[in-house]
Image 1 (cartoon, rainbow, N blue to C red):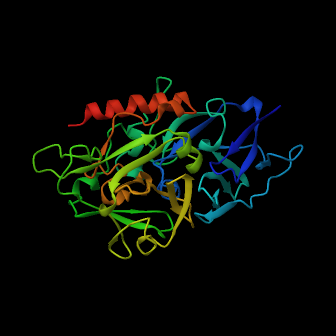
Image 2 (image 1 turned 180 degrees about the horizontal axis):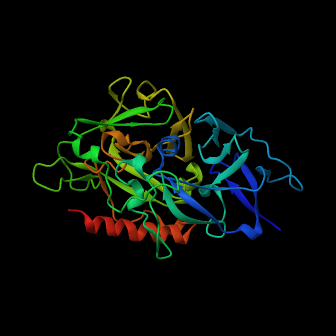
Image 3 (image 1 turned 90 degrees about the horizontal axis):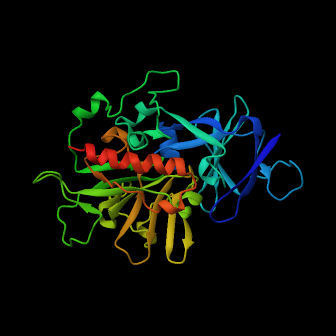
Length: 347
């Protein structure tokens, strides 16, 4: 028997019927933390699952192959092509050219827990600090193994950090970029908190320590359907503290002259905008008109400068944003427990 699950994006330009062998469900899969997955999507991890056959038309009778004309293809490596919505940037598919296998991103599926079980983390060593795997520790009370590379490699303990991180000197800026590097940005430090209501600015742990920017994981439907990821991790930053690496000027998405040239814009609701790389599809910003700060997608963080969590620059919030929108109770429970545990362990 075959089970069909609908997949769609936020703007509605793309919708597909996805086939799975019923006897295989739920499929075991892994959360991938590799540099390619993080920087092509702008997300802290990628969860996908192989499908039966090819993406199918959601409107045609029977099992007709779908048109992919509403998707942009990005070849992230010789044998891997990734597909995202041309209009709203939602990531839909991987295609492995060697084995001719298609996989679908979990965030665009109308059902998740019925289709897949996350059993492990892979390519954790790419993060240099464990990344979001430190926040995503268990599923249904089962501890997820954290593989350095593929699932046949060594495992890394909770709290692992690459040795080279200890040798990283503090810098005045922190780089961020998408996979194709059409979008290359840098954070700068805020030196004072003028208004106590600016919750996105977090005092240093010790007197004299640098102010950090708050970061959090969002489960809202808008983020999920415009990214293809169940977990959208955001950093809230004053606009003046994000500079375009190509111009060394602050980024202002409302000013055409101060927008990175590779950005593509999607108005997800009146006066609210999502920006993404038009080449590789990475989520970059969410912002509102007339507001002096915006949300920056955390998967863009250059791990080489201080790890994927960038804890010298970011303070991770111990609560989940918009938990009621979560499509996967298992994923929500895992992150809810994990961020609280991580905050309690901070020293």
